[in-house]
Image (tube, rainbow, N blue to C red; front, top):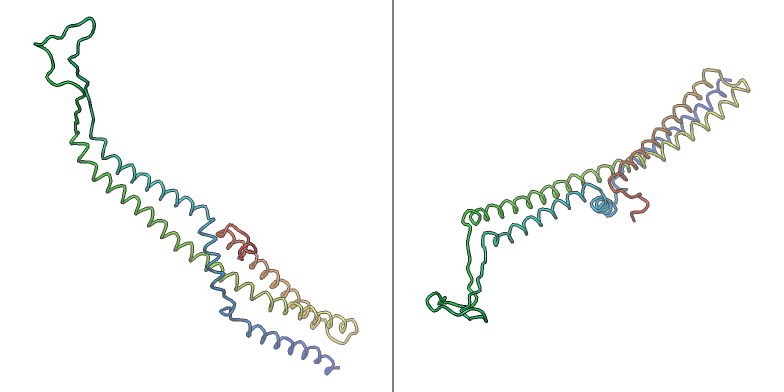
Length: 233
């Protein structure tokens, strides 16, 4: 009787060892990392994430301000012209004593020195604003790239863990079915049957938790790419 009770335990123990070896063989994710796909994920995030668009707009605004500052060099300069003529009309006679010596169009330029002196500082400020906007974008690109890569590695971690956890669940389920039949035949004790039941419950919870972790990791990565991972080839 004792020998019959030990057989299913030995089978379960051997199966557990085999599954453990399988887990150890799959514990490394280094071989699963695709650096090409990782760069595609980063490119998708840089192209689609809303904050990237906002930073691009800030750069465009800074460029527009710089162009406006450069064109404003002409603002302190005022151009004027006057048309003079000594030609008599039908109702008037030219007075030689008051006649203008210079006739035709006369041009003049006036300069506002105060406004002119402020232009270099305005242009310098506009250039600095553009550099700040570009630096903010570069800094955020580095941060975004690090986040995408980190979430991709986390996704791989949970993905690699799905198979062994599912295998352990199937093993626990098979062992429980065997123990259930033996218990119904009074070949094992209730404690042994209950232990198999608890093992199955724990394996199921581990499986569900791992699946949830994998899906959450996928959602977290897709938050940055703004596209389903299946759409990024």
